[in-house]
Image (cartoon, rainbow, N blue to C red; front, side):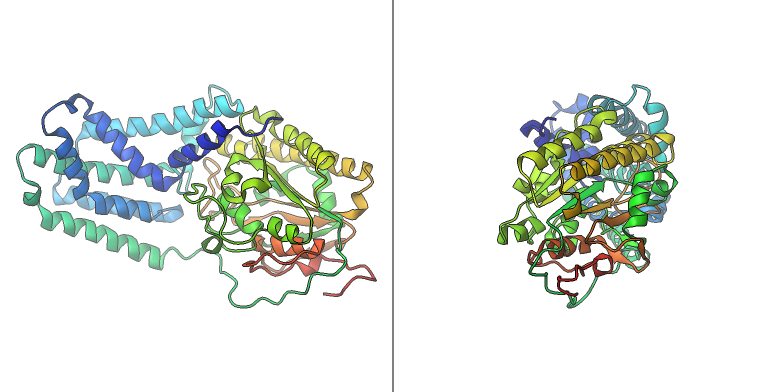
Length: 491
């Protein structure tokens, strides 16, 4: 299986500019405005009027960049647009029609059809379903129509109004600044109040010192394998026919209230899982990584301190956070064979590098949720395929004679919501993820009902492998699952 090429790594970063809602809004607004006026580019004064008009509406652009309006908050975005119309300011219908056409062309055809066909092999007819997914998506990506549409319509209308005034001879200082500034300040206060009093569903963070036992002198497990089924929604996993994973749950320890972090984006979640820190601490707060590398120690750093090695097998996005500890895999392949190829590569890494910790990211479930939706049979099928592949891999580990020395952890980094399988702001289906442990170092047949966070994964790995806890890690060790040998240390 091919590694991600340098081109794919750069392309993945560039794609996040269009996929993430924050950068998409200003990029789309600017591109649409310029396209609308493409015939005026050579006219005297056009660029000056366009630039000064943009300056006049920069506060609104900054407000809508800063504030996400996910889930039910997106319903409140229509109020400023209604107020704009009630004031009597104009909104050109041609510009409205063009912006809507470009938006749905980008999301439904370019992204939902062409992009997914070329990258993972979805049908050319994917647009027949994808338009419904875009309308239902509630997370703050560019594919959240009910958030993006009122945002870009209002910014474009206000920008166009100032542009026309400037082109008609009004000096920049002569714009209707009283209403212009007053309106944008009002939108800013409105947005602040909404997020201050209604945006109240973020997970509660662990505060203060967390008691953790000293890692045992003799590691409880010689090897640990973590398999992350990216985007596996918990209720859909429970509905799927996954005999092997359910057997692992029954013969190991299952955490029934394992909570992901906020925002629940893949690179953010992986960074928290393998540093044990919250996003504000490790510095990765989006899939769009502006400064490469986490700010805190990772479990891979901890293992190096005791002469051990860990590898993370995953897609190019994860390099932005974990750097050289990532064995990259190309994400450009048919989704039906993606996980199969990844597991083949996992065996190769075990044979050639023999890491003490191997983390494997399975991507087909997440990609199916994004391209085809989570409430369709294809999504369940990918979870069931993951079950068979994990069973084959575990059997292979045992055939190598190291199964009894290995602890297995299977989990998801986040769930997925309705629509295009959005995730980030913890809609229903995103917050709680499947999480279970299996092996000789793990308590058999145990269910832990107490709420835990994925930030506990890194310190638990350190504890199992006899490594120091990553500096900056905050999560407690999942001691409820650990079965100590008689000669081992007690927690």
